Image (cartoon, rainbow, N blue to C red; front, side, top):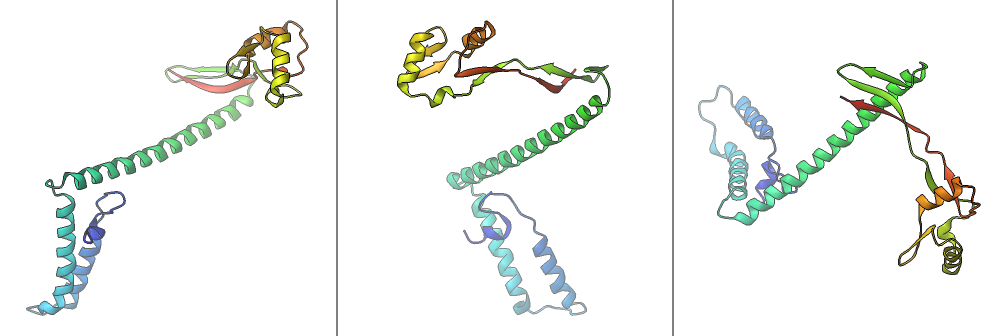
Length: 197
């Protein structure tokens, strides 16, 4: 389907501009200004390219060939999904940048929360504490060491196919004063956010 390369991007199915054909026509017509009749030999290459493009478009849009039409539609959907993702990523980056600017402005005040009627609220929200690896990461233990720890602290390890730390139980144990070298509790800190109304 050679002709479709002129006006249809075969990779995406997107219909391209016909500006190149219009520019070529203008150049030919300008070169023939004042001439009553343009020789067919001069027009033939241009007419050939136009004919090939028209044929390609009609073949691509041929409803008698549903596979080709479906492939074009699927390619266009894929292209639009990619465009959508790029746009969403840019919007997310813009929102994060604006949130960063708002956080800088908030940091220059002594407020931890600013409510803006009809717009939303800027605030610092406390994040929950979470259990992470201690001085010796639990996952670095051998199966025998994990099994030994499980038998010494059965309430702290969920038994599955492999040993999985029960981080909720571990946090409770550490908060209660248990010395567990494989784990530690880190403060959750805070996260700056905007709650839209």
